[in-house]
Image (cartoon, rainbow over all chains, first blue to last red; front, side):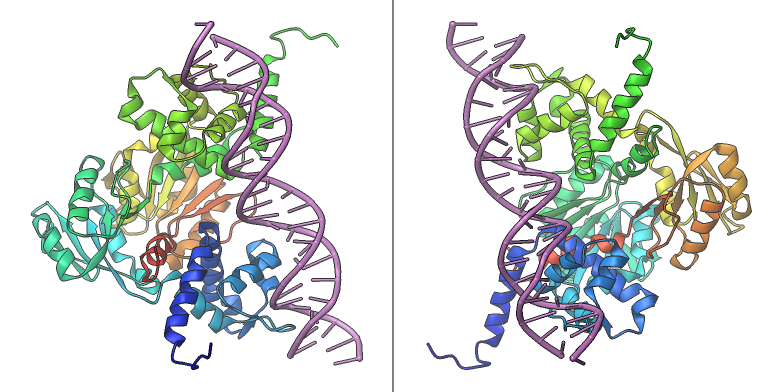
Amino acid sequence: MKRVAGRNSLKNDTRKKMRIYKEIRRVTIERLMQYYLCLREEDLWKEKNVVSSTQIADYLDMDDTQVRKDLALIGLRGRPRMGFDRKETIHVIRQVLGFDEIYRAMIVGAGGLGGAIARYVNFKNYGVIVAALVDNDPKKIGKKIGTCRVYPLEQLKFLIKKFEIKIGILTCPAKAAQEMANRLVRAGIQAIWNFAPINIAVPKNIILHHQHLSAELVNFTFYLQKGRK
Amino acid sequence: MKRVAGRNSLKNDTRKKMRIYKEIRRVTIERLMQYYLCLREEDLWKEKNVVSSTQIADYLDMDDTQVRKDLALIGLRGRPRMGFDRKETIHVIRQVLGFDEIYRAMIVGAGGLGGAIARYVNFKNYGVIVAALVDNDPKKIGKKIGTCRVYPLEQLKFLIKKFEIKIGILTCPAKAAQEMANRLVRAGIQAIWNFAPINIAVPKNIILHHQHLSAELVNFTFYLQKGRK
DNA sequence: TAGATTGTTAATCGATTAACAATC
DNA sequence: TAGATTGTTAATCGATTAACAATC
């Protein structure tokens, strides 16, 4: 079957993207994120045009073949004796991880944690913009935190439609978390990032990511124990 | 060689503990944490004395053999037809993960995030107590946040000695993070939990856990992309 | 060219799952 | 007892690492 070059390119791109995504596992995503961070942030490499898989592997204390495999998976080719083009690598990883699209988020609960997250400016480098906060405390409503405003809880659904919000960030007290999650789901949210120290349940089609800070403590308590090195 | 029962029991316990710890990997720790959370928190099981590996596995959507293997690794035995003793399981997991010892922590940076963490009451369920905050803003010094007080930055070293602080929590701005980490290390801290959006370097013997909230965004951006699912 | 680095296949390693006898 | 659940061995699966020819 004959093909006209270009005509199907967009379609083929999408198909290729989907094929790639099927194969990318969670651990790979985490590693891609690490490559991205060190390629982008490390002063050491900021001026370089080309970085070898060995350099990345040494920096991250991992195997160089792994780096090449991961980069090959997302379509990146290196050049023998040279390595990988730094800018291209950054660009493709951003593309694959979805940082080049824009998703808007809403923070539910304008307390200390919610406020701190709203002020976290570099979310936008990762394709996420906090568009609004909601709270039920009249004293907080109308205030500006970072670049966004605190709205009354009643406007939750309205704001989600208006700003086309896809991600709900729960920084409310634990006892309100499930109810707030339900409201977000009913309002058509697609993903929930839960900071409340409680497990919540959502429909299967909703992306749910728990951020239980207490659960992270095991990283210290386990390794600090006597008898451990 | 003959052994006197009891005489070596403490020694043997420690030896056994160390042997176990050698074998416990990061993924296992994470799973133990999940078992702990669902055994402890799920209302469903709060009244039960016995829970089977199958029930836990179903709840967490994993393989039941895995649950039995993990529990066997930390010395827990189940009873055929019954399952595992719920309280004993909780107790042993707490023990292994180190939640029964007490470690004190200091928060460096009494902003929104630092304040929110200081108020997170259930850290103490995991063996961690926030003993103090430090900040260089004179307006904040002396204030009480949750149950602890904000001290001047100059007292950092003094406070670490006084309260026997083992964990430093960095919630200061990114540009101050490395310097604050250095001060913590010089003052004899053993672990650092870094919330500042920058990579910091510490000596190898220090436990370092980065909590880059921005990096978590990939959990949403990747899966929200068009062409996925 | 010589040598460094890639890309890929094969080998190893470890983790997960299946099977089933033992047991209460 | 019959049947459910454990504990353990063996089989499978997948991920990581080693080896090495290809290449600039």
